[in-house]
Image (cartoon, rainbow, N blue to C red; front, side, top):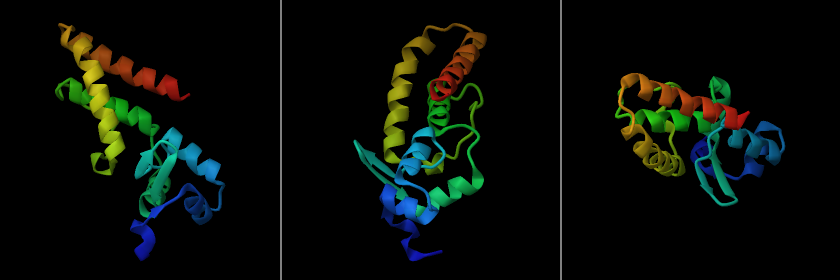
Length: 135
């Protein structure tokens, strides 16, 4: 592995490695095909190793769907299996903040549900809405 695999790269630098445009890199990141290590406003940085791993493995669902699924799984206090598997070891700080925000948003609605069937339907609805939002 190259020693620069851990260095943060701009979209332009990542595009050069992959022989695509920087717009393609940002599009892939936005749809969850590749992970951004850091995002603040328009500033986005990538780790070459993580991007190459994500492209090699592929993702079953966009990252935003994975995050929504994980958030509802946490909000349901792990009562049901996570509907969309994801490697939590790959979460960026920004994604952790987003998951916490989503958990806080889901909790009041989940606490109002009485049966396991209602909670399961709620979790399924969250994931379906996240998928619909991407497509």
